[in-house]
Image: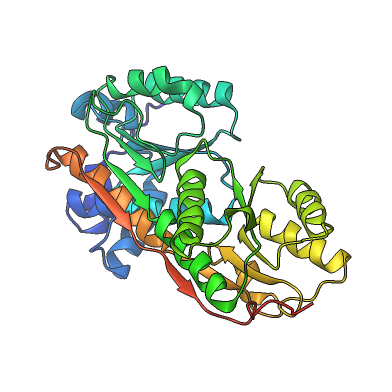
Length: 345
């Protein structure tokens, strides 16, 4: 008769490593306050005993899954990537596993991901809604019981249930950048930003227009060009703008593929930055920092967005969050070498 080998338990691992069960749990879940020696001993004991955590049993016992979801529109976007990384690191400290889903700004895919998160009964969710077509899906999500934190988007279902959110002050950031260019003498400025149907784009447009109104400058010079997150799309639009008889003398562009497209268009037309064209990036990405000349940029702490969102979610999971909690993070203008007064001809 074949010998029946019993499955190792967490207590077996604790006994072999000479530590408490709690220490084993923290070490295996990447929790903080675990010394390097304990983490090493626990890992060695778990490997020797071939220990596999029984997440299904834990879920039945605690009525939790130990997992949270994160829903974003473009995980390859460096502005999202840093937020996701910071949130994941904070949640991992508490033993939670974060599952990331990418919607590609597709409303149908977004609905499918919301349904998948709900069906798996995740403990909580961080979401950046990409479409106002899915208001019903967000309302259903809100009534599903799991806490939800919004990442820099409009808060769906406002008034029905408090939605904690971490928001960035894009309006004031855009106003500050536009004021700066106006102060240098620019009167024709183009704003290249993703669409106004989502909060960041709409807030930037509002701040951009407000700066022109405050300076009492002809609003015809405020050129708003709504963008897809595509280098080719931005390049085409920037080429069209820069070929005009009364072309913009400055551009404010989201600092990812859109900025890359605008810079490529300027290069193709032989326009020098900043002599012929001043440029400001929205978001202090690697491209803005390493470009020659270095690009003046609007900066906000992506890591702070991720950590703040994780903390709001942890408060809800612990039952310590009361009412509707919002965090509004500031935006700063980082001056570099890409902006000068406009050419005189």
